[in-house]
Amino acid sequence: MKAPAFAYRRPEELAEALSLLTTEGAQVLAGGQSLIASLNMRLSAPALLVDINRIGALRGIEDREDGIRIGALVRHVDVLHSPVIARQVPLLAMALPHVAHMAVRNRGTTCGSLALADPSAEMPALAVALNAEIVLEKHGDRRQVAARDFFQGLYQTDREDDEMITEVIFPRAADDEMFGFAELARRHGDFATVGISVRARHTGDALENLDVVVFGSEAMPLLSPAGPSLRIAADATEPMLADMAETIVADMEPMENHQGRADTKRKQAAVLLRRTFKDMQSRAFAGRGNGHG
Amino acid sequence: MGMADLHSIAFMLNGKSVTADVDARLHLADFLRHTLHLTGTHVGCEHGVCGACNVLVDGRSTRSCLMLAVQVDGAQVETIEGLTASGQIADLQEAFTARNALQCGYCTPGVLATAAELLNGEKPTREEIRDALSGNYCRCTGYHAIVDAIETVAGKRQGGAP
Image (cartoon, rainbow over all chains, first blue to last red; front, top):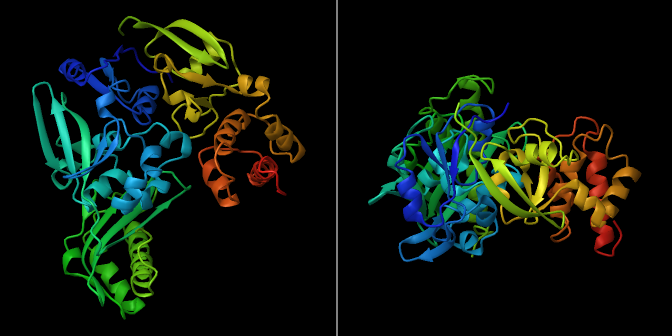
């Protein structure tokens, strides 16, 4: 099908974009890799598209005092190849190869992915896992929201219609942190049926205080409430790691759809978790390190 | 529905400058095919899944169904017609023919755009070629021949054995 009619503006300044967003039915066009697909399928009908691609202030990955800033025009391909991200936010670098396909990564943006809150998307899950901060701006106002409070449900976020995400700030990885990421998709790069990400602290003889997020199967990223009390000991056996995985998936509420039943997805998540725990254990205690410097 | 929202654009297409007035809702693939009659760019799914419409925008492979025509204002766009005329992917096209890496040919322009970008970088491994191709559907070949053809060219361009 073809997109419905809409008006289009391409401001050069952020202030003008924010002013245009006060128009009824206005929507931001950044990478457009989900938005234009939904227009082509007539799943959305904005009155006005505000194309932010010429606004220079929204570009750039910056290593700042408050963390690593990713502006609203930073594309997945930029994150994938950024030395700053590889060094300071290694979990993002680990997950990026799973984000869509080359041509889509060439245009799609980190902040656009956060704003859409597709349940299968990696960026919302990682923002929750790493406790990132999302900056929202509208005409005459700017606020910062923790990613853990931003996502509210299936495609539902704390963002108001006249607000846009201008940047997201990821905390720098600490030296004692280790990360794991895995997902299951029908075709590499396609929307994940289920995915998991793990952050842990290396305490010498164990990986402790786990932040585990399960996504894809859930309406919104699930931060496991059991994570902080779990530990991957250097000598933990595979059945022990499998038990940990079972504890985590007990809190899942998987959506049933063509990709599988709820119990199937719970089982798939448990397998991904067990394998990732095992992988992190061998990286942590076989002297191979985290793969980042 | 509302009236057309026309915008003037100027951009480089296959090395030549083009100006046009386009409706905001027109996507790049339809603009190339219907307005400019460059029908080498194919439209498969029209929602970003199949890769048949891939073209190069500023040197990067891009789904032309997921970009509005108005957005290429100021950009450099290369379609299969330009990539062919310039000879820059002649070796790829030859390898595709030699290795039977196409059958019906519907996906081929998009696959070649992907391969053109991929081969601008360092010599890819077979795994990296497969990963790059994960965004292009081919329903005829089963992909092995396509991977073989790209791998052969990658080897030759580096001056070594494939």
